[in-house]
Length: 331
View 1 (spheres, rainbow, N blue to C red):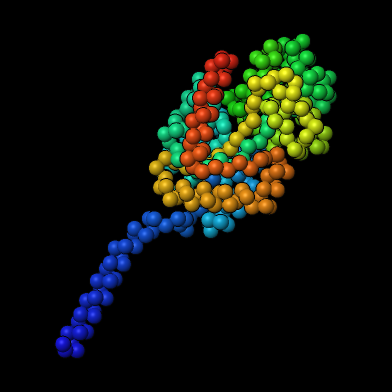
View 2: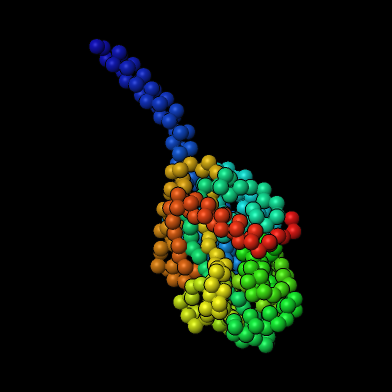
């Protein structure tokens, strides 16, 4: 074999190798996660609520673990449906996610227009946390305990108003179900977000509010609002002296909230798995866990499959509760 022939074969081999590499690069680029672009984490409610507090506590560590910037966008409206739909219609590549609360399993049965199906239009990434719902009152109201409030509301049907972050929110349902179980009536005053709901409670525009412990704990500690009871069956270690509605006799009442991370349907399984892995690591980080615990959250993680099954169970539960209590909201 001549030197010229050997050189020609070497050049041809190198060219073939380069061509093969160039053909492989797009496939590798498409499979890689994360790419060099920000991840948008949508919060479908105004700042100050549970979804928002949780997102802002977890996002910095989650971004570090993924080696990527995470941008939080608040997209409130339509009881959380507006922001959630935005994610459902986004590119299924793992770069647009939503922090979804248990509300996504309530809205389909409330008579409102829900422009997506939670089981069809999303890939569950994993559970993130749960938080107790607490009944709080303006401190100048005549009732100082949960039992006193229950007796007062029964004796004064229609005279008490309660605030919530909006029609169809878990806080709204908490009030409606309580009123029916306590055999009374209360006026629901919906707001556009938790912050406004609690601001007007502090100002005395409404008498009570059902709110996440995360959103009102600082106001309880400062004395701006009075905590009356946990809207569920389990006490919280943050306020162990606070009775539950079960303690007060409402044994089947539970309005605790859970939060999850969802991606658009058809997001690749390997991307969902990577997001779940990083999310679990972020939530188990001691600094993040401590911050969340101080704000009333209980870390609660899962696999994507476990979240999918859990959502199915919750859909059945809320369909039954809403039908039994004949709760509807304006479309």
